[in-house]
Each structure stands twice: as structure tokens, then as C-alpha cells.
Amino acid sequence: MYFFVSSHSLLQKLDTLYKIYNYNNSNPKYLIFKIIGNKLKITALFDSKNVIKTFVKINVKRDTKENIIVSTKFIINFLTTFSDEMLFFKKKKNSLNICSKQGSYNIPLYCHSDSINSIEKNFFIKSSTTNSIEKNFFIKSSTTKITLFSKIFSRILDQTLFAVGDKKFKTVLNGVFFQFSPYESIFTSTDTFRLVKYTIKNIRINKFVNFIISKKSLDIIKKILENEKNFRDGNNKNNKILIEYNKKINIVFHFQNYIFSCRIINEKYPDYNFIIPNNENLDVSIVINRFLLVNAIKRIFFLSDEKKKFIHFQPNNNDLQIYSHNFNFKSNIRCKSTFLTKRGNKEKIKKIKMSFNSKFLIEILSSLNEEFIFFEFYHSKKIGILSPVYKTDKKESLSILIMSIL
Image (cartoon, rainbow, N blue to C red; front, side, top):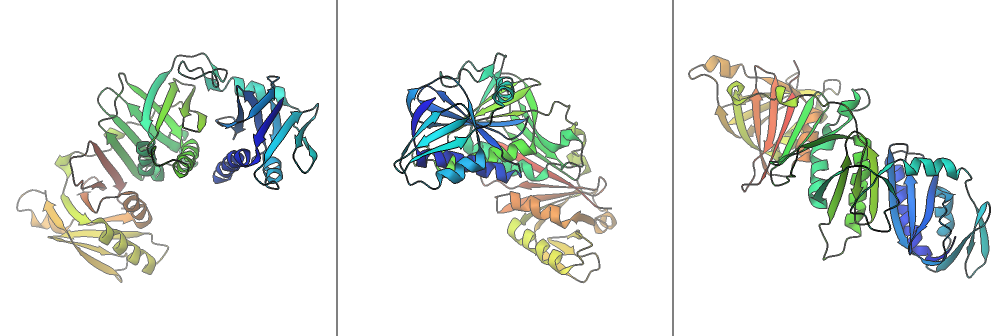
């Protein structure tokens, strides 16, 4: 293996991968280098379930089709000592020789290349659309191809990830449920206390496909999207992402500068529609300014006893009363209310009081972008539902359910 590469270009790629590692609290150990055409393929293995590949342009002198494995932190620290100059890389028996204007240096290599090759070989899907650079990555398998714009994908993650369950919940709740169909696409997450259902009508494919991706993998994707956005030029602000899904095995995301593969959660997602109440059970629907509401909740949250992380809500005509558990702190916010209880049942209206986890509410309201929101109270079901009031007729809908605390 003989090639020339810009120290700045290589360091930039490696530094980004290292930051993604640390973002997920992983313990980076090594990177795999391999020459593919006139590019250096760099593979980062987070664990047995998450792998990233990226490329950097090189000037190839001789390619022996072999992998070299280097310490992630060591190679990054070493490259930071150079200014932007061309470096010559040459593989020796158990070391990598790097030549610069200042001298020649031998970098130690990892020797367990066989085990790395095995992991890499069996991890990826064979894609009919991949170019010659990528064609050796994948094993043969039938795949479903889905294309999303990066801006839409980022919004899907922003709307769902905050409500994903943590490790104490069942594995199936540790991720986001993706559903694609010829009619619409639905993205769902829940931690049993909250449930997000985000529907986009103009994302359609010609068959029904659904899968669950873990929060850890989606956090990596979110970091990749942020990095792609930072390096995007003015004429290419919304790149397309190709998703290749292999049923019950794994899924591959093709970004502009990265290829990311991860395992899916191969379990059945709960029937969330069973939990969502219908309008017949709706007691009160209000339209309220999101900024006023979230700031009122924060004030009461900061002033109340920290051991009691819930606050009470009581609609009263065109006011929404918000107060702490001990009634010491209270806010009244103007809103537009519609009471949907039986006509003349004023006593029932007066009894509508619901309590919610203030931390959960703050996270939900902070995830929304619209100025005004609907807040629906299902008193008999002990459920509240928040959704945006869209300024225009968007081809999307968002409902966030939150359970009331008894």
C-alpha cells in the first residue's frame, strides 16, 4: 500500500469520526484504511451494530488490496503536528511508514486484520446502485430503497428522539418506529409516558415497509447530518439521503460524505393507535401561545418543590390556570377554549383538572416550532395531546400524547 494524501484532508475526516465516537460515549480504538480506486476508504466500527465509512481523495502509487488498522486517537494526535502538506504512506510488515518534509516516521499497526475483515464483510447490504468504489462493501440481499431529503430527516429526528425510552424499558421502545406506505409515512416513538406520532403525507413508496432503529444509531445519524450541514455549500443545502433496508437484518444510509450501517431492532412495535383516544372522549380543546405556556411551566417548575415534578392544569373559560402541587405558585394564561363535554354539564367542566410531569411538558413544547399549539384534555382517559397549529395547510401532522399523573 503506497499513496500520497493531504494531511489536512485526512485529519478533517478522522477528527469528524472521532467526534461522533465521543458524542455517543463510545470508546474509540481503531480505524480501518483501504484503497478503493483513487480514494482511501476509512471505516470506523463503533460496535458490532454501528459502522461508518467515509472517503478521502489520494494519489495512489501502488495498491495491494489490503487493510491496515490504526489507533484512532494516535493517528489523529500524530496528524495534528503537521501543517497542510502532502504525506506519503507506505505499509511495512507491522507498521505504517509516513514520510513528510520533516522526516520519516513508523506508526504501529494492529495485527488482528482477519477478525476485522470478517466483521466488515458480513455487516453490509449489497446495493445495486452503489458505484465501483462501494461495490465490494456489501453482501447480496434484496433491498428496499427509500430517498429522503436531509432537512426532512433532521426534522423527523427532532420530533421523535426526545420521547424514546431508555435502557430500563423493553428493547422495542429504545428506538423510533419508521412506517412507509403508498399513502403516507408515519414516525413514532414512546417512553410509555409520552407518545409521538409524526405523519408526512408526501413521503410515499410503492409498498409497505416498517422497521425500528435504536436511539443510539439515530444519535449517530443526527451527528452525521449536522456535520454534512456544516460542510454543505450554498448550492446544495438539502442533500438527498438514500436508505437501503434489508428486512430483519440491517439498514444502510448513504449520505453525501458518509455511509452508515446499523442493525434494526427486530421486534414487533406496540399498537400505539390503541392508546390514542378519539374525539368522542375529548373534554376541552384550547389554542394557546407556545412561548407563554412553556415559560409559565418553567417558572412554576423552578419555584416549586423539586421533589414534586408535576403541575396542575385547569381550563376556565378562556383562561388556563397553571399551579404547583401546594398552590403557592400560580399562572393564568389567556387562551381560546372549546368545551366538548355534554351541554349544560357545568359541574363536569369545573372538575376538569389534570396534572402532568413538568419536565416532560417542557421537552415536548421545546421540540415544536410553531407559535400556537392545540392542547387537548381527555379527562376520562387521563391523557393530554399537544399538536401544532400550522399557519398553512401542510402535508404533515404531529400529535404528542402525554399521560396525566393521578
